[in-house]
Image 1 (cartoon, helix red, strand yellow):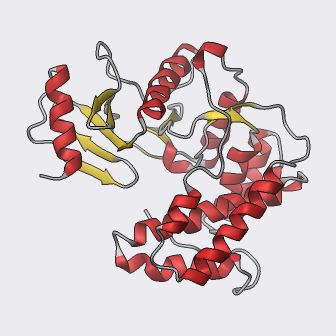
Image 2 (cartoon, rainbow, N blue to C red):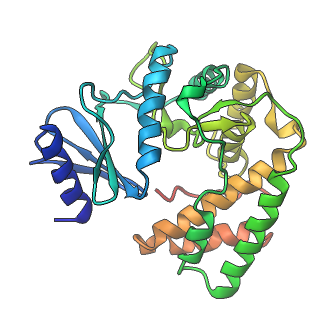
Length: 293
């Protein structure tokens, strides 16, 4: 039995749920399991109890604000702590797929128009959270490459502290892309998932995330970015602080690929390619990065 499954089994026993037959959905930074009772359990990393508690608070708050969002299972005191790992329980969604570009714009606009109450205790946006750790653990890179990444991280951290004025700060998703804003069918509103990075900060961070999908990954049809900007009502790439947030987002993508390569060796080449791109070795964007999840 894996560590996460052991943690899940103990957490389920504390709240009266059955863990037998639990099926692994995804093993990334967090592990997701499907339980027989139509519940999805999320097993967090060590020491992430406050983050898990925030996710529960945010889900309840967004529901009250009228934002369609993944819902916690009611009548369970969450998160459940087991050996330093936090477990949360969520209602399983019906069959769903990535939201269309207009749906993503609508969901982000709705979130960004919200001003969270003080009792929600949203943390400030932390664009560089865990990056130093990821770089230190990135065995796919040699010491010189890791040194360059640390220097790049420090430079971007300094630049982030000097961002020019932009949109008013608000609630932000923190990890916005079509896979975290999904739809369950035609004419249905988009549903917001994965609240781990939910924070208070510049909405441009979420908008830049979508821009990187288009301008770095080249993952959208040619007119999709224009449709997104029109729908949302703002063109983030014209903002003076855009390049800082773009480079920060791309750095996260590089380190994520390196992290995943430790589990999936076929991603080592992609991690090295991403690093070479941000070092200027492959010309201008788009770089046609492939997913590393």
